[in-house]
Image (cartoon, rainbow, N blue to C red; front, side, top):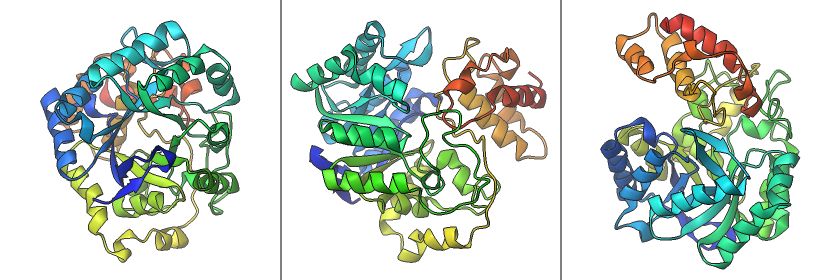
Length: 380
């Protein structure tokens, strides 16, 4: 494993990191073993935006005895309310949620205290002009968070964060498809269709990477695989498939990028990501894929990120979408997949069509329509 300096934080992080959002989908021991296996491969940075107790406990137990060997991105503003994720700036929710994170992860500190998910001017104002940001600074002054970071999908908000001078690093969504989309403060259109064609990297995103390089603000990468869509020619806006090595290389060749945080369900997926370190130049080459790709329209692809929560009916929307996407690729729904779907609890049939989830989706997914299709396909 190679390691890179994460901007002005000075932390030496593994090029291939761990995005932990799917840990709670597995049995606790299985997920703990997965983190241990990643550490054996040299991975030393993990993101915990997830507010649910199970995910946090898994990471805390996996890091027990090895806390000083890991850098944890812990998010401030990601809360757990009535059994669901809620992004909040309400200090009555924010403080207990972050204190819970500290307790469950262990060590009494967070390496990277992340201002959670700012994608619009409204988000910025609610975070930067209220007691929320005072709380962040107080945690930093006390050493409870050792470095201040921020997560966003919007290059304009990322640029504002860099310009504050106190944000030391950014968690930002980077992949070849995203880099070709202009910035937007409208979450419903930020990652809308590619019907105008793929015309090269958006100037604002290119300028952001350069600014981060100039100001020594490190970048860690989320959404590097676009929820797996870029592995599938039918779902990729390029009309062709990429490999993990190509997408990892794409992210790591952007200015200021230090680590790409990949999501893992299995040890084999960790092996595939870590294999980047020994891949040949030909295996890493993404440029030839982009250059030869046909131009395809694209909109509404779920990346299973979970920002659609909370659901008033407590549907696990991301997993319903994931199982639906898996099912429609097969001649008939496998019984094993049907069983996993039915075990979710409230299924797509519970959807009341309120569309509140759609207002929170960064990717313009027509969730209510997909819930209806999933209910019809699975019969419940």
